[in-house]
Length: 222
Image (cartoon, rainbow, N blue to C red; front, side, top):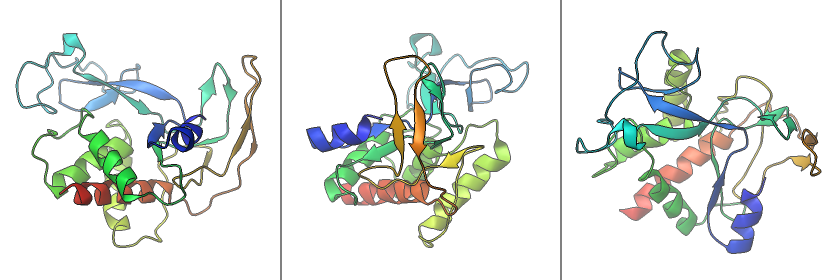
């Protein structure tokens, strides 16, 4: 997990994945799905153009404009090992436990380059919040959970003590903007990584704090 170290060393905001990332594509219903079989509606074709993220019709899928990367809502399982904790969204680190105004603004600016379900030009606050929810919440194949996540993010702005996680299994890590409460040990050998410390987190608020920082960053940019 290099993002916290890079943020502190380079003194710039750095985002990282604490799960494993996967490719999403736009399908014919103009929704983003992970492109593995079973994670999008059976028989549905892929889109030809991205008309939901951009203002013009020049963004064809054949040139890569209909692809994006997002973390899966599971702990990492792959070449380096099988872990039992993670986050279902990208996590920003600022080098300090509390995000500075500059870090929040950088977070907000980063979303302007994220292909989403709203066009990223001339965003007002409500559309920006919609964009941030799309960035943080589950894929479209989990319809009810995605709707619930959107509502939880909105509610968290007026209820900062509310807990929520989008993880489907494993522990949800407790993170601030400097580090996460986890110790991962690895060697150079495949399959060697394991979590040696990750306390239970019965009332997770990492995602809500992240959403609040994005919204505050947008407000600071105005």
